[in-house]
Length: 377
Image 1 (cartoon, rainbow, N blue to C red):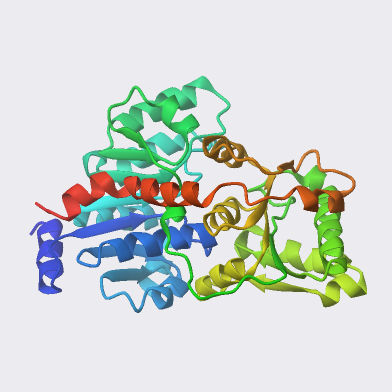
Image 2 (image 1 turned 180 degrees about the vertical axis):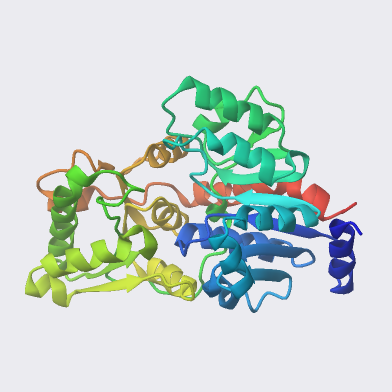
């Protein structure tokens, strides 16, 4: 019997009209995990299915409409050892009525990029695949762009989060643009701003940043800011948005480099999968956000904070260009020797009217998906 039919029966028995397979960067990252929460809470009447590690089962346990197949379970561990885990993912995704790939830096040209177009073609049914919240690049070869253009052209819907990415593929009729999905999050209420600064850090020695030669200058720069903020009476939160990518190690290293006075005014907070609201509340309480992580920048701007973006990837600058951001910006490759002088230049960057406009426009990522999920076949 057709397994998709069996899945439809199971989904109907659970009280849902259709099912959606979610593919995402599932590695305990603040931005990507907020994407997932936004998606499943937007469609409480739809059953969502994902493959993920054990923390995600706990993380989504209070969502009645989410089924998490835990990769740490015995059978899936065995499949991974046998190198047939992609076949399992293929089977589960094809059993669902639709697929959503929600994520940010999806389309980077890796050294082994030749496998990427084929991976999309084999894993998903393109005519049932919705790609949301993504950005394009960096790209090194024309061939990668040509091959991925062919892949993207067959997808049901592709919504980029910056105009540079959109303009690269604007000739494709299924490609759209909307500001980052997280601009549309409802802001924590009844939280008073305090003399606090949240600094999201990255580990320059890790492959996802690929800037090992700048690790010492970056750490000195963050230390210099924390020292000056301490002198001004601010509490500093060194925040790890993704431990698996080395953020926590970087935060602890920087904390250890601080003077005793600055260290007394600073603490390290790590995102562990169950404290998303804590991270958002820390941002809400902060007057300043020093944002190396992309979504620290977005969350800080969306909350109306004084934000200092520290650029390590083109995606950050492309987003700022779209926003006509008016505040100070630093590049991790060319950081100032006297970071304390920057503090007076850090501004709120975008107006309240712009924040409201961006929140409304960000919902555009879901326009095409809503048209089918709110009136399923």
